[in-house]
Length: 200
Image (cartoon, rainbow, N blue to C red; front, side):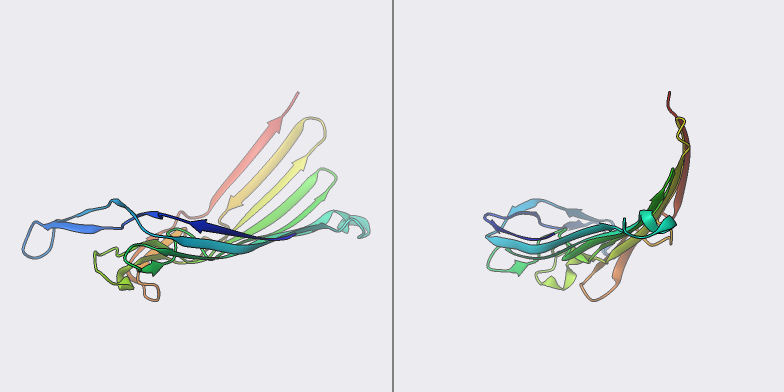
């Protein structure tokens, strides 16, 4: 499946980012920042979407339950945040995608899912400066999840899953699109879950 979309925006409402309110000490520590919503001008969002899935039922023997799937979105955003200054929309990645490989036969199933979210602009003028160099950006995020299950057919089912299999970071924000200044990194780690269910 292949599709496209376009949306025209008027009076764009956005988070203004941070603005310095006061400096409590002469060395610049204990500063107070405020955030507030602002209304900008017009803008647009448009993109294309692709989605496909295939189960290879024509394959012989044990390969009969093998399949793959994928979806991909590529989008472009542009808005006037006031005074004719144009930026990307906040929190709108330009690329988002997911790929899946799965296999099922009898009561057994296994699938692996890879997810990707491209870089995006999180906050305008994060340090309160009048130019775009201090915009706050978030780096691309990727992760792989794995699931294995078996249904015994008598009401008993066993499942095991691992989230973020390769221990990728969950969030990485920084000042400037092409720098890593003042980075903030969150790594939620790898988690595993097992379950046994019985239905009657």
